[in-house]
Image 1 (tube, rainbow, N blue to C red):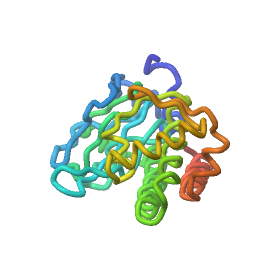
Image 2 (tube, rainbow, N blue to C red):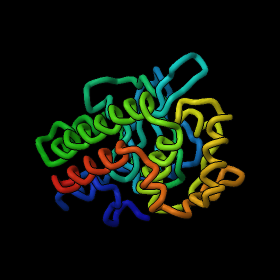
Image 3 (tube, helix red, strand yellow):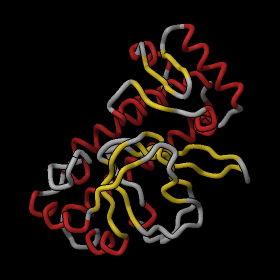
Length: 236
């Protein structure tokens, strides 16, 4: 997709046509490659990313060699929130978990545009609330809910953002996502396969029965999805 066509990123698509046209020269279309690291803890954030497709996972360090997913970003948002909040460096790891395309903007340009009094700052504020809801609800989910409910929630959230029932995943990342050992992840994934909810082979997952997955998922999924709907209704 050319950046000159209407973007599928919902933040950019919600901008008035004139404002988006003003941003175009500052946007660079880039490919998002599976497992590519966008930035690491301590990195200076030099660019922000507006995904048109694919997903970027936000991971936080639990211990020196242990990571936990705290949020995922698809075409509903952007990656680089600390910059918008006045912070130059990242405390988290951002990694591509779903192949796609994004429009990137240099941080210096982004800061100018996010303070210009146009529609962009308002949209970014609304998205900030949406992402914080996702992060806080995911924290509650990881603390109180069973592994299968958490796995179902993550699969549904990923499918929503990827716009497909088929996507790649690694055992290591599933472990990070759920905050449990790989053995527990394998057991839950195998149980889903036996119940014909998913097909999982060689790092590829296909959702076969979404309706039953939604029944298994905890109410965190509906809370997060409801917040995203509210954001869309308010201009995103």
